[in-house]
Length: 161
Image (cartoon, rainbow, N blue to C red; front, side, top):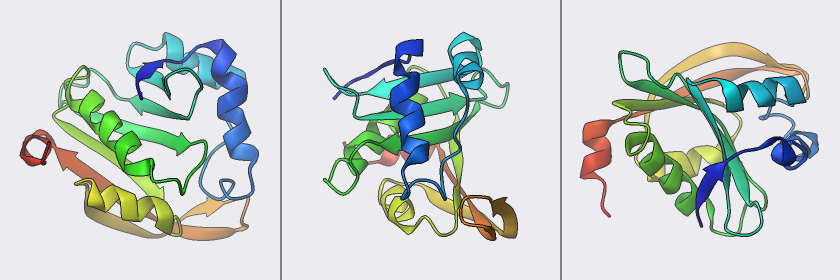
């Protein structure tokens, strides 16, 4: 599977994720104008994962920050539970430290998103903090913890290939 830049033709594919019941607690449904900003903003990348058919997407933000810190802001797979999560995330990690030249990748996750969190720690991310009762998630109607995960370039280099 490969990564390619997202285009406006991908917006329907991306927005369909947020409408799924299993994703509503964890994904924000952004309108086309916001998605378009990730394409035109030099500090962001909207990427589609898949060879012929889109299978997932991700958004990186903060590219070019003097600290070298890049936020893996949003990622989702079309059909989770098929064993592709680890490969998808590893592809994103390699992209972040490779072409984006990140010194550190980080993301935040809802404390109740257990499926995603298991994959993230197995791929080398470290739980760096927990913001307790931090964010109200409208689709589930309650406040959840926000978990902060990160990986440094040195940790990425040390990962098995």
